[in-house]
Length: 416
Ligand SMILES: [Zn+2]
Image 1 (cartoon, rainbow, N blue to C red):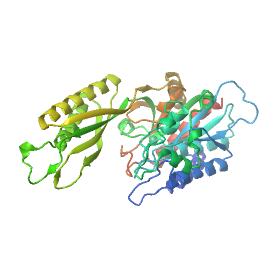
Image 2 (image 1 turned 120 degrees about the vertical axis):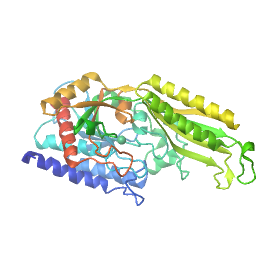
Image 3 (image 1 turned 180 degrees about the vertical axis):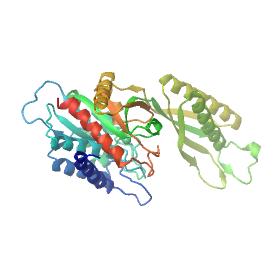
Image 4 (image 1 turned 60 degrees about the horizontal axis):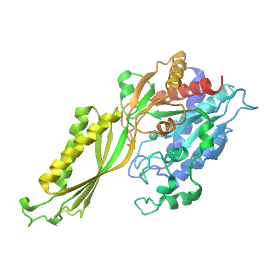
């Protein structure tokens, strides 16, 4: 390590540890669900860190926080602002890096440029997007979708969390007026680029032996709710041949999802199941399960769903069940802006980093913004490949390499 890296490294460690102190879950990992006390503490932490770096913070109509590093005089050139950042919320019992790393990296990168007396020619913003994970209301990338007009908040304000609190009440509790929450088109049209740095949620960079990579695309992604209805009955007295057991249909469905994903090179997961009545000594009457599926191409996802549906209907016929399969969400493939990606790759190469390009099967705010703003993502190597879990990791050396890459990118896009 050269002596010039030490202030950046120290700043990164102190800043990262400050955020990691918020939302430690006694059950393991970190839990900062949107609009809770932990989330509020993380947002306060963000405001304080930004202020300490001389950045002023404002909030857009979707509840996202923006910390601004502005040119001293009038902008030296036309063109919009450059934004970097990620999110502060986590899934329940999540890891320390998902979201947090990108926000911390943005703050530290801007401070590093200022320390090197680099000055911005256009405004730079570090953004903390609200409710990216959707861990409380099932609405992932809430803040970026509302900002971009891709999600109408009026249609979801009555959604309730597991405790029965509605989104409207949660927003109110966090100091937002639900009636005022909505898109912010002026803010989006004022952006020249958005770059999100994120811990990798797989082992692509491990396989390449690279600390930092560039995203090429985000896989299309869908969520479906499967309801299988049979007949609840006594687990002792009901003969096997008389049963209409929806758990058997569910078992077939889960295996079919796995088989289709393997055949098509996709991923499919049933991670949530609700069984009624949910008694040990009763044959279930109804089961609901959620399928999450992602593939490299939209058509592959269609094929996966068709195979899944066929297998479910076949099993339902065999076990006397009725089937309802409803789509809850579907996001198309996102290809990141090629010119921006090439520019970032060239800049990283000039700094001695050979950027590996890889796709991701995880959704991100950058994927939402990509529909209206040139967007790109930087990934930092994750030695475990695990994410949404306390086992999520990134070595400090790799995080520092990521911050340096992000600083180079901000310098390239906003300071030259
Ligand atoms: Zn994330």
